[in-house]
Image 1 (cartoon, rainbow, N blue to C red):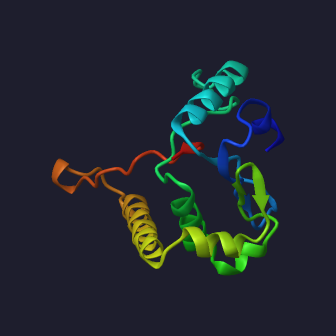
Image 2 (image 1 turned 90 degrees about the vertical axis):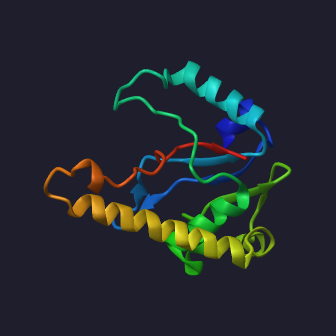
Image 3 (image 1 turned 90 degrees about the horizontal axis):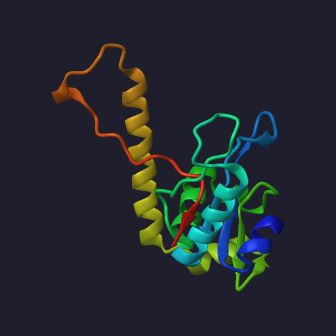
Length: 160
């Protein structure tokens, strides 16, 4: 967060660094929702200059647009995957309003995640899991009629 403040101060509203619960370490991703596309572009350019993100290498960080866009959808995605009990966890996302961290994540969820949005995200997550199970269960090459359409690439950075 301090690094973001250097080049896009108060221009993001969601920061989440997923953790491996068994090993208690980062899984190597960060999800950031920017308040506008110009801020996302600026962050990408700074990151690209500093880390050469466009160079393909497993040792270099990569930046990509996320499939899930917006504060509400990102919070709903977290809830569907982690559950309400994780809202108080130190590993929970950080939400910001006008550059100030919102410490009551449950309140942010009440304000930004409608029941319809939560239902839609639940369905989307279930579809992603079904796709992953089907993909992983295939042992033989598929014919074109058996091909499951691939979802968009999972991402490391997002903007509204």
